[in-house]
Image (tube, helix red, strand yellow):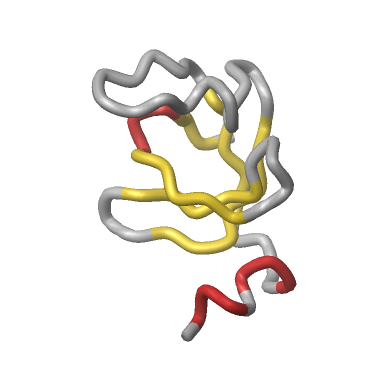
Length: 67
């Protein structure tokens, strides 16, 4: 149940959102292009970050570039 402690866990790295042009999902409500976010967890396909809502969300890596 690692997802219950992500909010308080250490930052792994920082990533910058480069676009919010999602093909399937609406992400422009939770992400802002040009903003840097703290990565709390990472998988092969997703970054788990604290987004604009203040909660941890999982987003495809295609929206970000590592800083």
